[in-house]
Length: 419
Image (cartoon, rainbow, N blue to C red; front, side):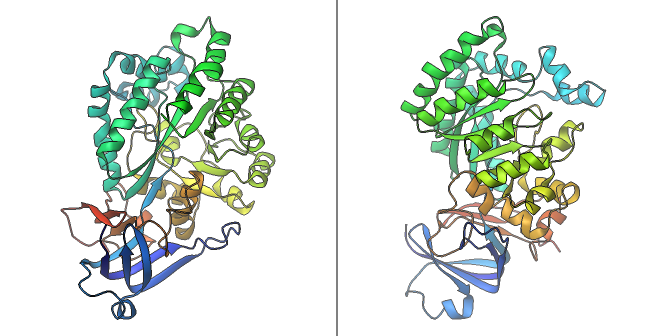
């Protein structure tokens, strides 16, 4: 790609990637900034007056019109490939039924699995693709996307193939994860055989066909036990897949300890987490991915103890958990508002949590997550005065423009400024 000079940025704010092992959530701010892009990476970042003197002649220019420039946001935990919806369950929970009660009655993940297994890959792509587009409009340039709503291998394979097709159609960077979610309805009397097949046949096939780069498992009451989850994840590591864990969403499931033991790239959910578990995760260098929109939507669990996690030296990322049952949102900015209110996170901590620490949760922080020389030129622009406003405006906040690799891939038709 040709060079690009982005000028007229009112304020550029970015985490600093230097000293990666030192958890100091510093944010560098440059007023009246500019960015020079060469090929798909950042060549220079600085004040516009200085950079204007050194850019090559005839370099194409993009006018940011006084917008705030941030790194492209990273949504590091989503479930965006499914069909249909579960709006009825949302209202059943509001009437008093729990998530686990609904699942036990045949709803929940099993209901989504029935719809996925009856759908074609083309239908899955058609219904799922708009979710990626709405995520892009919220400033997300990198998105982790899980399977998990097929349950049976036939359905899981369709979801992973649908993700491969979607990857060709979206500008975002896509990290694909194979999720072993819950036991299929048809295998309830055949649990041991299902687990054995997953370990010896399915997981190696996912890796050998390059259908995903990571494996995840729901280690929880009503899903898979510690021992079962450990067998799945160990098989994934043996097949050179990265490892992450759905952990401690509904109780102290052992998922946090398992993530620490296996040095997983992340442990996600973490609504129930004590100081001992936090210490294990921090010592193992596991990123804690919190999903505040899920807690908001379910309305029955505590918010993750993000303040304690941060104070104990954990890296904390925030993601949408976009899915049909427990977090039907594509808005990462809304999740920031939830984390600001309920987890008492500062503006600097929030920015890190959806940029550099989220990139670290995907083990891609050497390429994305900050606006620094040599990084990929993934940038989100906002009609906002400062980073404090990113979580202050909630409910309908969209990016003003987005670049991926220095290419403008989204511009909002509403150019009005927020104050």
